[in-house]
Image 1 (cartoon, rainbow, N blue to C red):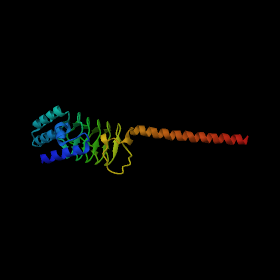
Image 2 (cartoon, one colour):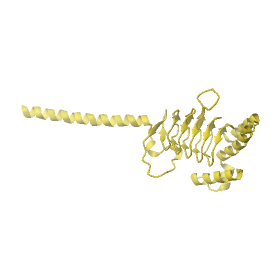
Image 3 (cartoon, helix red, strand yellow):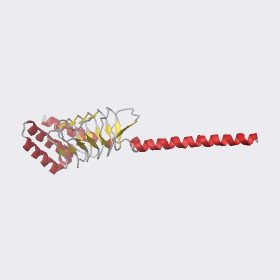
Image 4 (cartoon, helix red, strand yellow):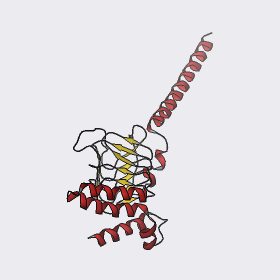
Length: 225
């Protein structure tokens, strides 16, 4: 089972990261892969109620990789943590298969109460660098979370969210695609800024209409004289 996990995860890195030139390079030089390997050991100890030993393994992994994954977190298959430095995944977080996340991502809690308090991430989700997903919320399959977004509400499957707080954007997707950093080109602007720009365009159009009406009134007045 461990061999299958390692083989398919390395293959996933090779398929999605153009900087990965060989299996050996991924195995030796990718801290995200190393963190997931350490996590499997820490989680096995945690499930056997060797909680302190599991936390110690998790702490060692954090020290070596810069990636903090609580041993109680559940991580699916073919998960990729790209670059990885500063990633924090909380105790009750659940991550599905084929998830791709970048550095400085936080899957955090918003309460000090025990029980489920961290996010559930569906299959095929991409989480951009610096994004914060907070609380016991669910991110649907194939959702995209843009870089530096702060997500505190559930995200529907296939939806792209950006901004602070994160808001969905409309997208025209003709086929499934990989969005680096979870941020498609059309989402370059924060949704609030996009709304402001839309209102500004509407205001400009209204001003132009008023100017035309005023010009028409003057022409009729001139004709009446």
